[in-house]
Image 1: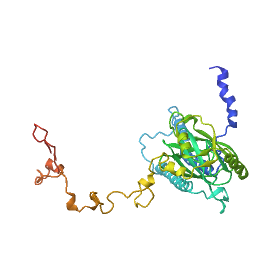
Image 2: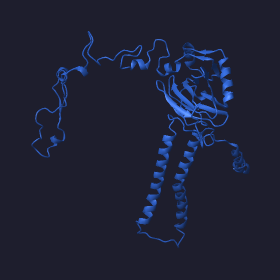
Image 3: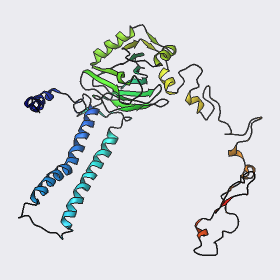
Image 4: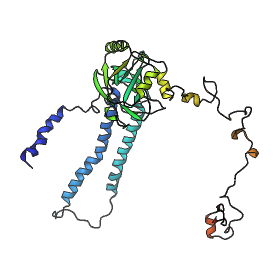
Length: 372
């Protein structure tokens, strides 16, 4: 190994000081609390890991073969004090980790609206969260702003210091919505809606991505998140409204088709209820929404009552739930006991181990087989 190759890592080490690990230095309060949880958990675990590593080296040195002064106890096998230390310390750490995780899990529940915008700064009582409807497509992201009546592809813009409520779904395969600077990742799934509440506390541009492999174009399924002040957000909304493109159902069906490296697209208007149709898997013409299919009361438009949930209609057979026990009958139960078991009066007989007998149906040209 040359001298240059040996010193290169040490020369490059100071350059790493300019790196920014966004997960540990986020711009949003939710992500900041998650980063603190990582630090606390790591610190608690190091309370065991570090002493064990130090003691491993210390014991290896102290009780080495060449150290004739070390105490030698070949018959030693137990120490109550040592056992208490070995078991009590990890137990206390596990209890602390469990309590910390339990509290953080409920506090940072993505479905739960955030209680603060930043440390010591509560969410104003009159501040409405910005709702953004998110659809993961192959292979791009669709963002719908229902309050503003606009939509974008691969561009997310939110005002700083305002709670954002994401409603997320997928058009096909599962994906993961992830803006590391804002909050943790959350899955998007077809036919289901997930939620995420988050906030960005400073302005700037932050990366967003899908963190779940979803096919050939997955590598390009990225978007930019812009955090701007409220005035900048209002100007951006006005600019999108002037784009002239409208996101109707036919346009969405074109957008839904797989495509890669899709540039930013802006829509000045969005068809009402489009996101709900995507969640209900009825965006395509002629498809019945899941809500209508699963309706049980029969009063929703386009729905029908389930079969056999009430008295049968004309020409309809009576459902099993409405039949009396005598009307249902029974089918042959080939594994039921037939007569007295062979060993019922012989304690210890092997026949007592299995109180049923399987009678296999006889095949054409063969005798009936019986298995005890």
